[in-house]
Length: 129
Image (cartoon, rainbow, N blue to C red):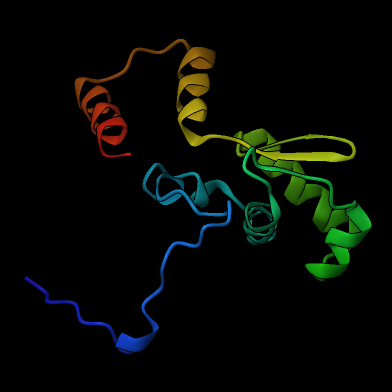
């Protein structure tokens, strides 16, 4: 077993009282693997600037400038996030979506049955969150 010790003990991060956080299920459930690099950075930015409901009103021009993206890259990144189900967008509003709802929507859309293992993993996620 690996014993983990902080490299800089005086700089251990604390969850801020602000609204932004990154849900670990983004990685564990494979959503990050379906994002382009541009989509990943756009998602991170939207998570950071969103309010308690995940809403933000940054303009496309402002987002492109802050993220150093050209229009085509930006529009593809936004389309990726919408397609994957991580973000909803209706000009001028962005909403970072709940990952739990993504799992439910994906199951409903495909209509496929879930394995017992997937049901148990989902149950454990709800229990731990």
